[in-house]
Length: 593
Ligand code: AMP
Image 1 (spheres, protein in one colour):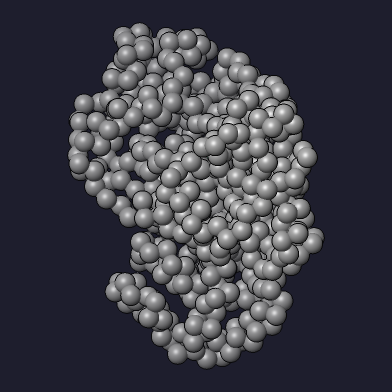
Image 2 (cartoon, helix red, strand yellow):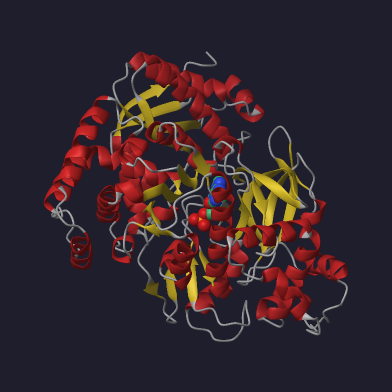
């Protein structure tokens, strides 16, 4: 390829701005010129990675033609759509220390581990300086939009439930860990705090302790200690906030004791964490008494509105609440009382994608405006038929249509070319000229026995129907759920595992089971149930703490709590063993006779 393009003219589009107004106008300009910027982004990626082994295979020595429209269509014609499996051999070689430019010209020194909880398997993805820069950029941008609606005090604190996983070295000496871990360890994380003038309550030693229980305890302790100064509560995914406050319900007396005495529970046994936290807190008896009396009341009220009660200056709760986080919204609302819930941005280990430019939208309605400088995006139109998605040819960002569902394809600065991300989104409208996306679900079908096909979203809707019965007819609540398509015996059938908190009569659980079975609307499922080629749905009630064991299984394998998403369907034998050993009661649906 010929790299004769004028790079300088493009650089303004990538300019990292300083103040809130500047960053918003930078984005608004980018959004206004989204189509042209996307073409420039593609050109930049190709110029930077000219002649890397992967691209050579598809575009060889082709000259980089000047017309960016032509380049866009040439690229789509010559480079095939790919999945992670296509990049895996290259990434493995890089991990093993291969120095030749395989995916990028700039050497890759860090690898990110995707959470793997959606795919069932963790994947390595290249991570470069560009990855932390875009993380910083989207965080600054989102903070700027939030500040237009919810102003927060400069120099205030943030109660952030964030967790690094362990970083380790690959055979070839590259640093590997989750993307969030690399980010928390990067200069950009510090810059973000300076820029947004909001500072995390917990020091780095707490974030990177490597033991999520100890980190959670310290996050809560320091959050309480600085409670007057906390301006908002946040985490990457909503799950971590819910998990932290569930722990709080058990830990509050111990936390109050530590605040009163200026001590640290013996639960915390990591020396550097102990030393750092003890270096921060001093005895604070009045604060401890205030928290204690509020908690005594809160305990009677099932911890409703705990966040504003204990953190009186908090303006909002901020986290990813869409997609697989939606099932935690009820609990989050319960803890947040009347505080606004602000849904955080859309991205993946592979690339950031879109920013929430309307922070006051309720989480159920939130959309994400695509950031056209971050990666080159393509969209595969998906048409739903009775039993599957039918695909059209991918289109560039400039050609997406409102109301259409698409699978996202990424070409990144980190060496992924036409990479199918596997997420399904719907275009809801445009912000200037960049599409606003609604996250629908992961593309992969999760439940299928024969001709039936159900996605994560389908399952989520069905579980919501069942849990409404639970809520209305008992005092119990659904803590978490997953599912499995059991085809070991004929006819195969769906199994849904529920962990619940509170007492509930068996009759009600039987009703929940029946309702869920009857709520799958997929044609293939309904027909198969009617003809009994799929057997009655089985609802398994697992004992309390089962999903914590699942979390621990993932964390033990290198996942970080910050990126954890409960798998909504599993055929992983270890998980199934945990679920089956912990099953206390089973119900079979009576729907369909
Ligand atoms: P990871 O593999 O851990 O990087 O997780 C990335 C995946 O999380 C994305 O591909 C999405 O499926 C999901 N995700 C990320 N951000 C959001 C969001 N704002 N709403 C819904 N799902 C999201």
